[in-house]
Image 1 (cartoon, one colour):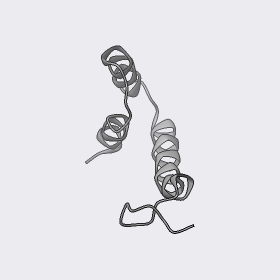
Image 2 (image 1 turned 90 degrees about the vertical axis):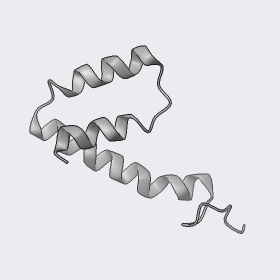
Image 3 (image 1 turned 135 degrees about the horizontal axis):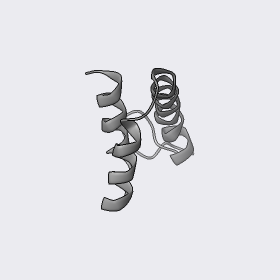
Image 4 (image 1 turned 180 degrees about the vertical axis):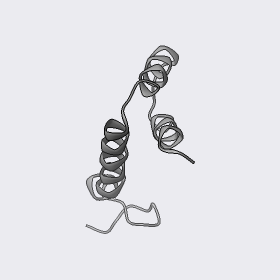
Length: 65
């Protein structure tokens, strides 16, 4: 999967309206390699932090408080 496909897949994980998704996908086509790298890095960081922010463990279960 190339970088553009990876960014498309990442965008597809967000709850966007059809119009928002269309705009996002159109914007991906004009992104530079540096922008694609940045988006993928930020998405990876978000996915790393999200479980902690939501208070869930690696299995997806609510972590003990």
